Length: 122
Picture 1 (cartoon, helix red, strand yellow):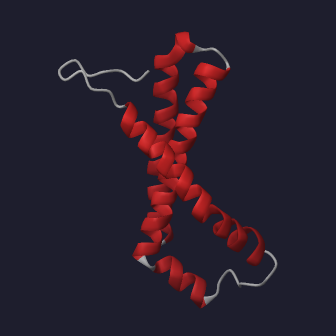
Picture 2 (cartoon, rainbow, N blue to C red):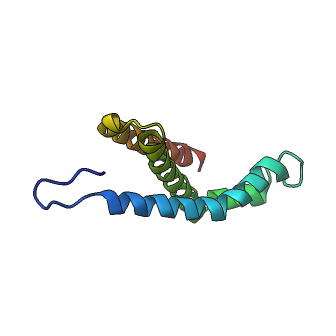
């Protein structure tokens, strides 16, 4: 269970579940086409990796924002799923606080890394 704040008694659990579900939906909708483009079309030569069209699409700030959002939501989806796998699946409930901190710290660090990589790739 997520920790409650001392002042209001509210929990962060709804926000984490929102990020989990949004990440699952985003991954289901966008990752297949990205895998197709960068895992099949570019390696098989259907789309040249240095083509002006592909570079033009990746230079668009909206495309970078969508890629950033997709990566961030996917990372938080992973963090929530992995957290519950460790706590419920492996019965590590005694380490819940450490697991929570570890999973979401990795998601935040991954998000910052994605931001830097996309910033440098533009």
